[in-house]
Image (tube, rainbow, N blue to C red; front, side):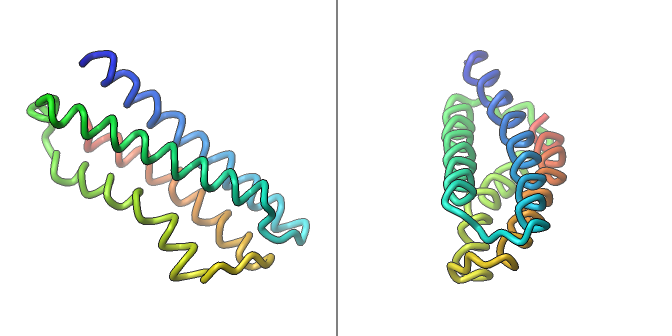
Length: 126
């Protein structure tokens, strides 16, 4: 289970840096007046898949009793549920499929928000 734990941590770090890249790239595209293109939309899908794989790894750790040492396991699970639904929520409820320049600004902010929130997710997982 130590290998799964290490992979889970690695995916978490990867997701955090990926959100930073997506946020900077989103602001760059928005400042140039571009809308959400297929390459950026595909990168958002990759981010969601990355989060989903990390949640599955966390579930495997939970099923094997790895959560016994966590001080705030319930909050860590809540954060996992949040990241699972946040990006689809933004797409469906807030943007309603909009791909304009305004939506590109929103995605830039959303991804940087996720980047700055990720360290809090780590703290609850320790």
